[in-house]
Image 1 (cartoon, one colour):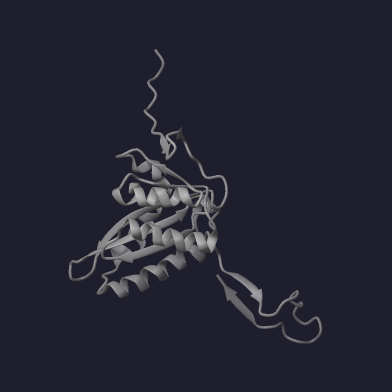
Image 2 (cartoon, rainbow, N blue to C red):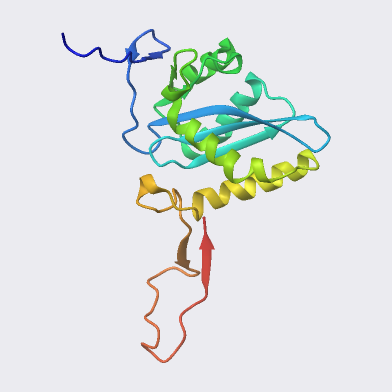
Length: 205
């Protein structure tokens, strides 16, 4: 008798079709999820994390006391304006993600939603992995005194994660490394080629 195969979950698109969706290029599949923490006074903090599954870049972390479906739409609106619309957006079946307002808005801008099966966080592995790093590297080691302080420190960590932190899945390169560009247009002269110093450099993210 052949060995019994383990059960495999499936991803359900908003049109009812069933696929095993894998990212193939930047902005092909974004994933988003919530993480919770608390400030020193015991009040809850919620974070909405959005990740590009192909590049591993964290596109946004919205930090607030409460987050609703309207906050999901607001964060995605800002990202769509800045980066364009992804082909798919993956999330779990939480109420903020399956709300009719969110589904209708995503369809309206031309993207497709992909929901994981309930109780199967491994199907949203990219953002779950990111959530674990956020907790291990920042949340478990910091005590946030206020919401404002949490927003500043979390955004600083997000920038470091994207631009400096090495990722083994990317050949130990960061998802969006800083690029050094000449301050003025044109090729940068080779140092000492005409006896002068090269122009100053500007750091861009």
